[in-house]
Length: 369
Image (cartoon, rainbow, N blue to C red; front, side, top):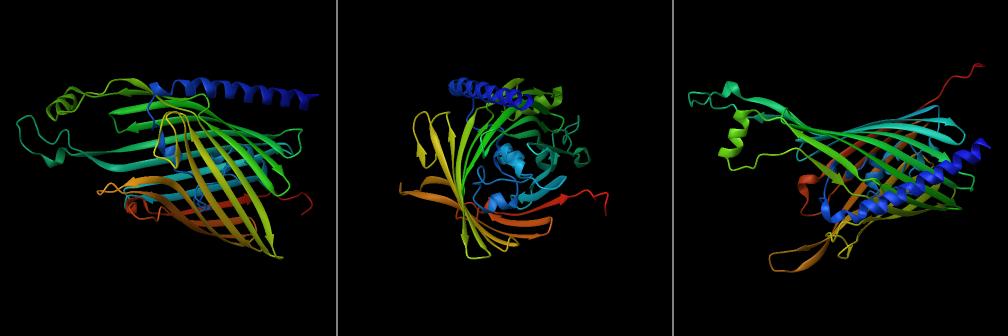
């Protein structure tokens, strides 16, 4: 009885989420296309090496980001994941830490933290003293950071192979002492297995994620803004609109020790035309493709493509540009170390990044040992 009641509540949450998803999507014309973009970078070198296509096959602690329904694949009493990467020649740093714990045979919880930041930014608003002299001792520094906390829950449903998951996320963004924002949003995901096939749907920001910005500028800083021709910022709310990611993956056995996993994802946005492979005036679709070849479940080789965009050169020649990614993985017992080289295509050299991530399982010692 308790199981049936819990599943009925789960389906009501899904229905309510879909209704909010559709309603918020209708407000697309009133919100910016790009908001909280640091949450689109991705986590886990395994996923990034596969071209960011991972909503269907994800089955470890990183599922808290990709699709919380996949947390039910976590093994051990506690699983921990961590990642570090750097962008723009090390100026920007991106870090991720997460834990996941099975509650029982049908449910799992997880907590994730993401930070994208630029530190030690010179603050020159006080460079000139009251007498009009340059005083370099007055230069200070500050950080501009984007932070997100995700609390995830996943549950198996009575339908064989069907799983449901959801995230509650809190966003905190700050620009030194000048500005900060707090935001809140929800994600919801489904996974369904049928034989070697894995199907998934992941709704990001299904309620819209609302960031409330507040600015704290003293009179001197305001004067600097005016003198340099910049508009004074005002307090306001920034909305991250819903998006829907659909995924399908399939596993293959190639002999006794070789496994192949392939996944195709399609990210759907509803805020007007974007520069994606498929786009209309109201909807845009961004496909991603990734593969993973594993030997003896120990060594893994990965590759993937994403970010397919049409680029127009100075001669008005329009060509399709894709972002290739490659990766390697090593898993020994309960420890997995993954590496990915992302964004290695032409024209995006500033974004090339070496990504390392670590994942390990913790097991309690039995009373018999």
